[in-house]
Amino acid sequence: MNTRLGKKSLRLGVNIDHVATIRNARGGDHPDPVRAAELVASVGADGITAHLREDRRHIRDDDMRRLKEELDLPLNFEMAATAEMLKLCTEVQPHACCIVPENRTERTTEGGLDVAGQHNFIAPFVRELIDAGIRVSLFVDPERRQIKAAKSTGASVIEIHTGAYYEATAATDPARIKTELEKIQTIAAFADELGLEVHAGHGLTFHNVQPVAVIPQIVELNIGHFLVGEAIFMGLAEAVKEMKRLMQDARSGGHY
Picture (cartoon, rainbow, N blue to C red):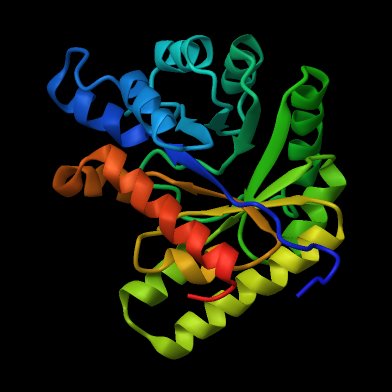
């Protein structure tokens, strides 16, 4: 543990993409993802994340504009590194942008961005966003070479892809859980030492969030699909409140 850290607070960013997925499945304008964002803001969410995909399968352009205009919370605009998304992001002017890999056939983001392999393309893209006054995060797998590459682009934030950890917990594989959690812990500490702000997300649930939440270098968790799914059973507001409680209990007590 990096002893210079002290106790950092831990924020919850709520991804409201799949409220829009439900809306789009039926057509029309209900349920409204902006209304969902307003609700989670009222019960303690610290930020809103929305991924504007190239095929507009859930969030749409107007959703992003409304989220920026109608909410006081910071908006995190997830997007692929394309000219179209760069234009829209600089127009919307969110608090932050998280660059993610995107495959049109994927159901959800399948892995981290290959910043090391695509550095010459990603670095100028990051610079354009920074020059537009937008804070940039890169969504990466927990690998040292990706963290080093992310730092060299000028981005100030990395978000660790926790998908492999989720898969280990879903399989109830203790050895694999330990391995994947140690990777996240090691990379979070490494990124923090390089001066990067550390976020994490993907596949986090009530059952697996606390071992990640207790990692002191991580200052934000971005969680969406689980919370929208759990809303069917307990309501979106209660799901967000329970996630915040679990995160805060882990961080304040240093155990889980």
